[in-house]
Length: 196
Picture 1 (cartoon, rainbow, N blue to C red):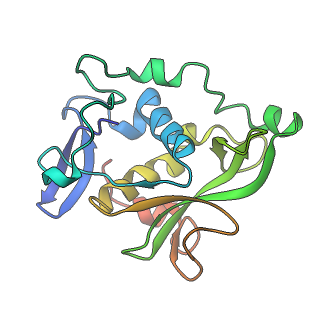
Picture 2 (tube, one colour):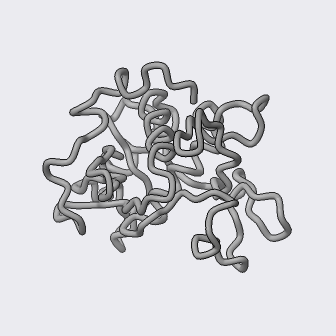
């Protein structure tokens, strides 16, 4: 997924990602944020690693793999990637018998930090369809302002770190005792003064 360029205070202090300073921030962009949350679901159990275009070549994406939101031939526009994705239908999926027994986390083993993605809504084959944090009346995660902004900040703070998308219990990585954003540090404090 194309994150854009980092806007930063210094080389190692990325504030947030943007395509251009005049564009809306990713956390304010419905398609961009929706695509990020769909990536978490599509890659549950995988390890993500946010990288920059100028990162070392060993971090480069496979050129044969289309970029979500990219502008090269063969890339997938955000709207196409999101078409038919039911992120906002938590109650409907729960009531139709989808498995909602697992929890999801985006974690950084290097920093021993995690952020809760919510309940993992899984289909009959066990694949995660989407994550949902909050009760039946809560909006889709990409529309929960503080949660969505906190996830974007988490990605900026953990550039080039390996970030597993965990679903459990049991979890593939033991996360007990790690600092949890949204619990040990509330969203308001985590986001205080952050411009992203």
